[in-house]
Image (cartoon, rainbow, N blue to C red; front, side, top):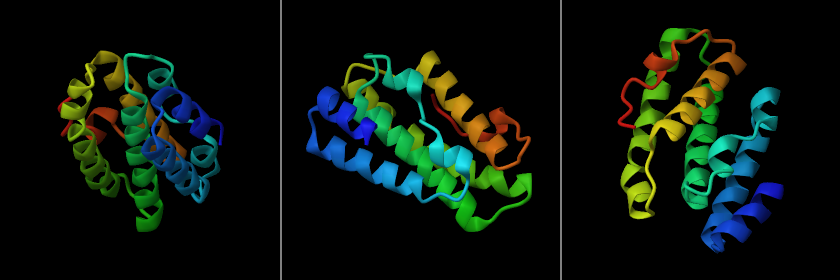
Length: 139
């Protein structure tokens, strides 16, 4: 709930609060304890350059990627990449939104997102190539 309060203060948006609460709820239902307890994109949340509601959307995409990994029950790395590629494309779709807010998915965001993809892979027991995981990225 702490994150919900922060979004309300920074974003002042009921939509932002609702999206944040939904992400927290979905993340709390994950089987993987490391992922369940992880706070995604802390460096972006702490940087006022990134709009809080868009950081929350990125976090939501990452949580949905974790849900997909668990739902598919994948055990082989080669099955991980199609999932990560799908969600990388979803992140790509947010670029215009970042630009409209006077921000962009630049070096800091790229590093933060790459680190989260690596964390997710390792949390599910994969020694995946992060560059391959995010190969379709446009950020």
